[in-house]
Length: 133
Image (cartoon, rainbow, N blue to C red; front, side, top):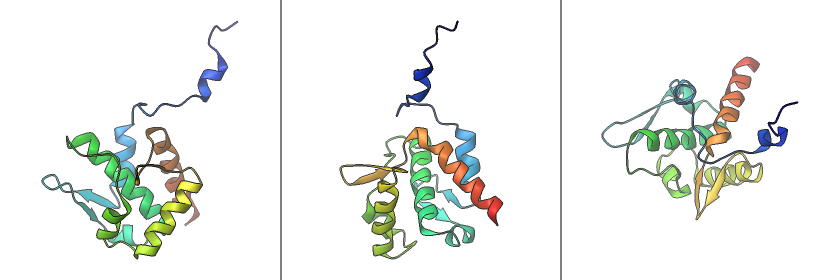
C-alpha cells in the first residue's frame, strides 16, 4: 500500500516551476520580447487570434519576461494592455473580466496574471485551437 496521499495531487502552488521550453514554444509563433526594453512585439499571426487568446498570450509573455529580465513583474494592468493597441479598451476590460470569471487568470490589486500552474492549460488550449483549424 502506498504511503503517498492521493489528495496531494489536487494541490497546486504559485511557486510551481514553469516549463520554460513549453512557455517559449507557446509564445514563439505570436510574439517576441525586446531584450533591452522588455516590450512585446506581436506577429501578424497574433493579431488573427480571438481576444481571449490574445490576452492569455500577453499575460504568458509577461510571465516569461519576468523569468528572464530581473526587476520585471509577472502581472500587468489593463491600462498597460490597452497601450499595446492590440484591441479596443472595452474589449480588453471585457475579456479580462471573462477570463477572470472563468478562473483562467487571477487579479491582485488591479493587475492580472496567469498563475504558474495554469500555463499547461493555456498551452493545451492553443493546441486544441490548432487542431480545430
